[in-house]
Image (cartoon, rainbow, N blue to C red):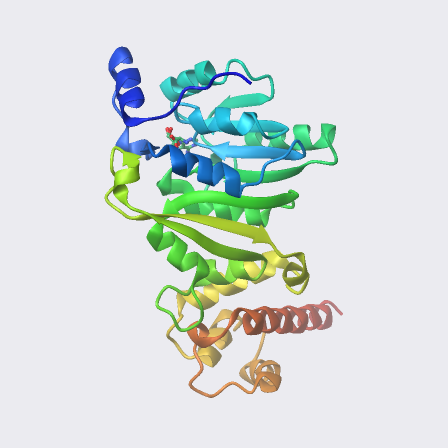
Length: 308
Ligand code: SAH
């Protein structure tokens, strides 16, 4: 097995000094310097030859190299040209690593086309393989990266990622918690979300200002099936939680005022037997999935009636 560089604080400092470079804060460059944690993340991903790994933020390529030893292939994206080069050097001995030098996102709602193309190509060539996102994510794009992957129809099997603690709280929050929002509902309606570890700033170099977390997301196809139209659901919960503390009935009446009358909204709400003071933030994920489906069905009927 090839010898790979161990990412320790002294190794990183040497590497950066030798090239006369500094970590770039604006790109969320906080490198994991605890080797046990790097091992832990890779172990939790349970990589096999049947896995294609997507890593966002190759950095110096240490974790990339570790994963290349265990996975069928690793596709790692890095925006910074110097990091991209360092990652290339660190993974030169592996023929199953593809390093992409680009912004991982095209915009907040979509991955860059070259990232999607590289993943699709590899999965097409190896139809028995699934996808895993394993990364110490750049924190500024952590939410869209996770959320977008869930949105795609890619056959993803697991995500093991480091993110801000506060984001982990939002991902796994339950109803009525102050952290509960559209993101919690969107993820929990189709995945199981678990916080594996809390990470103090000291495990990174340089130290970030915030506490971090390692989280694991696993797809839950049973739950996902109940959603029906996912685009509609995504839009539904985003708009609903925009007014999380307002009365549910009036938010929904406002949201669909062009398509549905107040009595029609009341008719849809009737089987739910909500209290008149119900608010979005009090509803659990299952109820929100059912509510979205009820509105989707009612709007379809209205549209059909209008068409004729
Ligand atoms: N995985 C490495 C690096 C983590 S730091 C480690 O743990 O050591 C996050 C990395 O993401 C940085 O190298 C940064 O340059 C990169 N990055 C930041 N924004 C990015 C973007 N939009 N697309 C791709 N990479 C990005």
